[in-house]
Length: 249
Length: 249
DNA sequence: CGAGTACTTGAGTCCGTTCAATCCCAGTGG
DNA sequence: CCACTGGGATTGAACGGACTCAAGTACTCG
Image 1: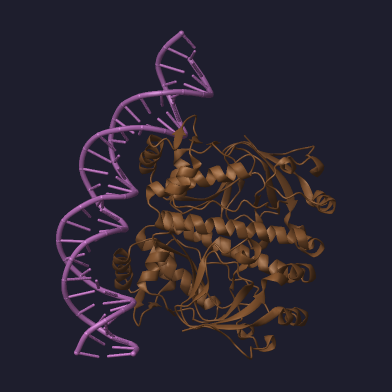
Image 2: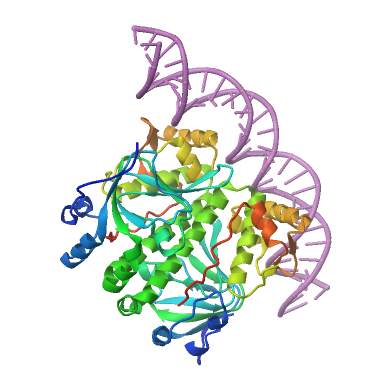
């Protein structure tokens, strides 16, 4: 149940993210640089904390495989899940730019992560403006997602919020190449859904039951099967994110 | 009540932000580049929309003077305020990186903005990695703030939320050089506070009244006077942001 | 002086909470 | 093989925080 550095990491030339067509391919030049920037790989088991709030980790990561989530907690244990992380996402950027992490990241499923050295960030900006631009792109996209979540938690009803979350996660899973357009299995517990939506577990359960009665989702095997993503998005009054190709590092 | 391009903009050498000591000074080299990157100035009256959701503006801006706020709305008019913008903040970055803006920005007080051309962003990354790094720093900081807002709206009680917001805005005003440590005047209406906290106006009013009874704030002249910022932060269980010097563009 | 906006306040309702059981299932150990 | 354990899901009941509705005050501005 511990994380471990993988002895023989994948070569960038056979990076699993290369095969996902939502990602913009790297040029040879870019790939070579990223290969030199990569310092290793990390594997995590479900439930493990990859990054801890307050830490000033020397690393940042790109998800190669698996699901995780970012969250913050108050002193008394109240927890808010901020976003989910999927293959292609970068985590730990805040720790690299600011003084320390303001949130934690836990693994939801077994994960594999690509490790980079925070200390080399500035030289990346100097030597590869294109990749630096991509990192800023990713940061802007994260901000855009947080904006929508905030709108959701602040102004949508419980049912709309739940519908939004399921449609959102479906969309992200499709774009990360781990689900198909018509359905998806999301490895989340109702407890996590509650902590994402800002609701209690009890009311989350009752709300999800309504979505299940509508046949929009089905709950099984400790997770959520999304059956009608479009209907969910419509119910939530949510426009899915852009489908343009996105960069990854 | 209209925006207008200012005919004779301030020279960067006498930028009002230079005198605020929370900001890291530019080198001569940086200042010269920014001066060439700056394409003009814009002035806005209160209530004016500076940037509109969905737009793909050719500009991005740095606030030189005044308050504004970022927000999103649902089709039926429900509004969520995402964050406030103060001198030194950059707005429109999303429009520059992604396809279009996912939120709007309105002026709260008279504002003066420094205008940059979106089309020159990439060359900025190529020619001035240090400034590119600063832009990414600003984006990370915005993300960090949104994380805290999300925690607030999702998991804090109404009273904690209100206390957090007032402490947060006080902190930001101090850091932007427009308020002192012991108190501040915030030019926000209760309607805006409600739309920031995800509460109704009525309940926001009753909650603010409690903070006023505690003598933590006082409401007057269409705004909030923060009297005891530390007590507010403590009530909200909030650790103020870093006090390290921050960059600006 | 009328109109508009912001703020206040009370009353009643409802959405979402807490408390408290219960069920189901997977894993563990005797 | 089965009792025991623990996490997740489910349900009912009662409470309460936050909502809506509805008035009323205070102030600014034309």
